[in-house]
Image 1 (tube, rainbow, N blue to C red):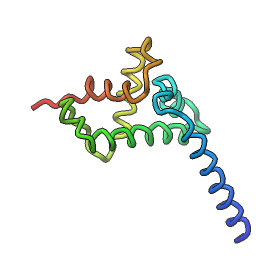
Image 2: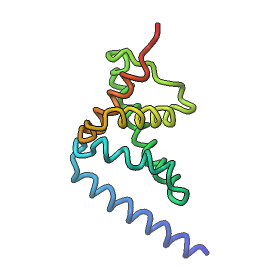
Image 3: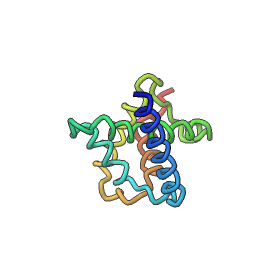
Image 4: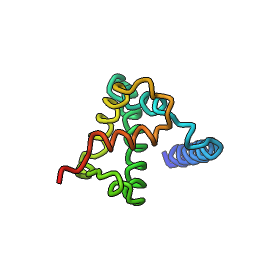
Length: 126
């Protein structure tokens, strides 16, 4: 059993390095709205791999919103994000709706689509 765990750990570590190396070669602006929309939508449609795809989408959303808040863009955009408990899911659904309403813009960078979503759906009311 222990040897299986060591092998599994080594395989996960190797895969992580391979993914990090592949991601390092990609430009962040190459990740488009259509690229993010796929795991966001398929996360709900696929009963077998849906959880993993939904997690991919929500992790991207959480990373974006963390940086968005850290950079103070929420203040500049007058955006009030939902509470942290269900934030990723609420933003994911808002992004999917926004992306379908602006389907011709799906070749924009994903970060621009998420920022437009936040500005459109989460304006501060006070």
